[in-house]
Image (cartoon, rainbow, N blue to C red; front, side, top):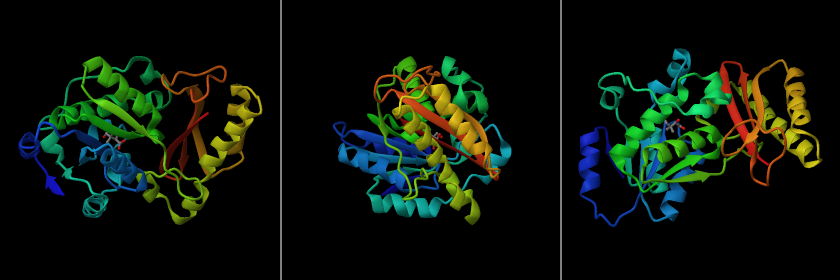
Length: 279
Ligand code: PAF
């Protein structure tokens, strides 16, 4: 595995490869876990030369404490990537990516008005800017993202469509711990006690999923999740939404199989966690 810190060195390397070689990009912010490794494996299985980026993107954080607390484990990450068969890792500094703070603004329309868009103003602008930069730098044929960030997947889909990037978006299923907790870099910031409590997110999603399966309404399923967390003082529910899995707009009723997403965000201590299941 070769590691690059600068855009020019990475570009030079990628341009020296045979043009017949397909490139798969796995964008990450590091603190890697099995979920990321699944993305690397998907890229390898597709026959791609795998480029993983590790960059904690300041532009997508709307809370400076959250940015400061974000785990940074570059050496461990590189070891994991190498063992997984990643070909290239790109780990630039903030000044390499942003010699000047970016002034452009991306607007993802309705996607910005709900859930992560509504509760983290400016977040998707930052995600869009960094992913567009990575697409320009790496020029991948495919880009791999996890379903845990379902709304992010929709944002990237729109970015690719609106800016005509010749990139195929691959969405990988959420990888869970054995107790149901969705794997996330932020899980590292949970205390031992919070880690024991954290599978409650998946329990709540499963509860809503089961209620919808029994024929209850989306309003009833959402009310059940709200009740679930109001009985648990360790959690602060930020939102629960039942939405169209592609547009992320609220769904008043259950849609076609695979089209309804149950999404939530909760605060557990100082850690904000999100998760979803598609019904
Ligand atoms: O999902 C993430 O880790 C980040 O939002 C991404 C896509 C790497 C952009 O910084």
